[in-house]
Image (cartoon, rainbow, N blue to C red; front, side, top):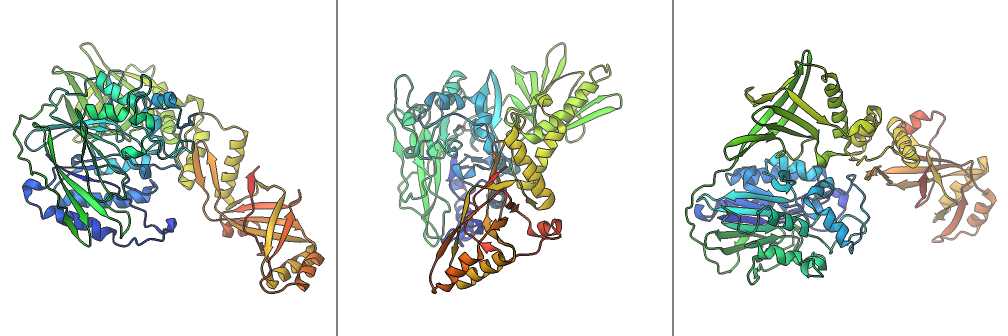
Length: 627
């Protein structure tokens, strides 16, 4: 099988908001040049599948993934591929650390805590900051990975496994590991990453590895290079095996990225284990060494060949001796699941009716007998919808998906579904059916069970949080009602949305002002003579934390009115002022001083009709707290 290995493309790195003083104008010349290079290859050398080992984006934000999706769609179209022909591994730059997430009491050395977090049953906590990444994968139509929990398969775009089949029938198993999602926790160093030994143990338990039946070759994939892994992942301590070595022993090939400085490509073979193969950055900046690799696998012979390319004004092949391996024909594998797209669950009881869209839905069979339908191959689902079927009845079971628990949107949808569920409890004419895209019934029944989480939160509270999320582009992790301090923050956000400002802020103690010109001193004298007060002004970009999410208020102003000042003090300084002097004055903030956090000055002025634009004294910083 022919595989294109690319990594680290960093869409968004050239955005003005990051102010990077680097040459960043040739991105599309380089990226589109790779596409043309691939198209020029003979058909037998062109890739059948693409593996991308992390860092699609720069800060994991929506607009970065949107731009990336356009280019990756072009890549697939030009190569005659679909989303099923590409696999993504999550990188540290794909994580959106503005997203709310559950707090974990851990440090780099909390090995037992981290191992517990890396169990497959806790994937929702690891994936909590990947909504934008998941949406990107979903838009492209990428096939998700599967992972086992309690004898059932769940789905993810960050961890698990999936099988791909070559044109000649070779079955290659891809294993995905997420080394990225802990790197944003402040107590976890970004060069102490984890693969997750519990996940490897689960794969052994369920015979996913090693030497699984019907699988010809196994590839492990992760983002961070081995030098960025925690020492417990590369060394054996006590009875905990070295994770990387354990993974190498059960794979034929390991692919990774996060090696922006990589020049010449390498392949490192472990005795009795798989080959390690890094991928350099496809794009970092205009002067960086850009690379991609074409990998040729003979799965039956367990052999691999490498054809690396590097960009130097144009894409060219390395002088790297590697065989173009002949491929052998083997029978195709028959899968035990049937997939449907664009379905709809319809539930009725008399005049009551409820619909839930099912973009992805599939049927599972055991020895030819249908025993379950579910939508767990839809990563962005809000509900886990499972329909179990036996000889006597068909049962519909719905609950909020584990990775969407404690999210505002899912809890609001859950409240609506709970209301419908309560209303149909005594209805004997209740029935449900799943319809395909043509309106034909796939499965139907009369029994419905709904497990709810959101009864602890009223709809008004959730709707209020939804307004904040939409306005400030946040995503909260709500596992409790707001405490007193959070209530104050919410009231402040209400005021900012409604009025463009808030007075629920305080300044502690003193504010330091630097006078660097005679004009500034004269301004202070004028204000102080008229009223005995001055007004202080500073620019700010406040960041507020609420329910695990960071809320960026943007470019704001801090305005402090009614600050006591002595005109004679400023006059003395002016009389002895020489050009180039800097006078420092500490203003004491008293209780009668008015402090405003202004996000929208136009709204602020309209709401304060008596307010006139003052000759404010600009200071570098005014430290505030929310009260």
